[in-house]
Image (cartoon, rainbow, N blue to C red; front, side):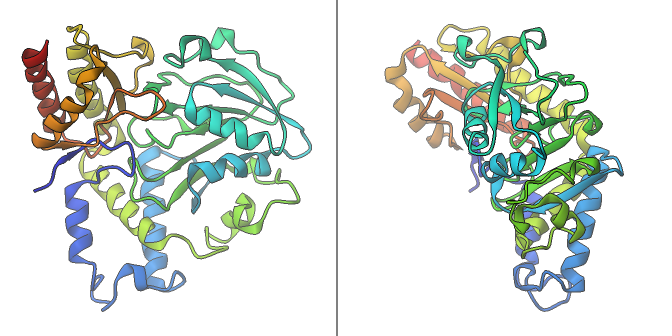
Length: 359
């Protein structure tokens, strides 16, 4: 029996995708082999990768002057790869600190350049996104970096910052493909796949082509965006099976009506849970309302001594991975694209019952 999996990542995948992958595991479309056994330079896999890229371009309406890279290393590796590829002759970059994942980006970037904290929500214990009017941007910075959805704190940008001539770089790991994005507002978008795209091991990088000539001389070939773009992401062997699964997820998204349609579903799922949280004092949601994440709903029981009991009961009711991150404690319901509305409704019903028992 499959559970409602609220894991923050690796996260739940659409059941139809898993069913298709299982059916094709031993023999992909008459080839007599699994995708994970194929040569990455064979015509079969080259076709899989090309279709996955084309479908992603369609889903996000990616302009033609952007390259799409299907790489390895996850977002944490990209935290170092971003400055390596974008500093050029500049020596500093601006970062906005909205929580744990922003901190990781800042830590890595400091190995390569001077990092200016242009804005921070540390004063609110990372429960909000700093208002753009408080940002102190340097027009000579190589780029401005943001994390548009913080999975640990449960906050999300509901707007796109304007950074002028300085390229805007966004780690969108945990909400890419969950909402409509104007890609042309960004110089670079990157993210690990294991939230809304596919299994761990694949990293998406969407980079405007005019930024491909800024890499530091020390940049390894496997991390060099221009070299990877010229080689169709195959300077090294790409994560082939993860790309295949991502392609199936992209096809599934199209059957759901695309990103615009899935965004409406995500709004409804998040509203169901937040609306209940706003009616009770038994639970509390620390994120500021206007900055609440649709993907990662962080909440706490007012009596934290009940946390273990809550989790045990949730698992017995068919819900797993609700424990909050160790950095903030409490609970976290990650309700990515693949989480059905029924899963959120089941969680809310359980929370109401738990409150009636212990409130």
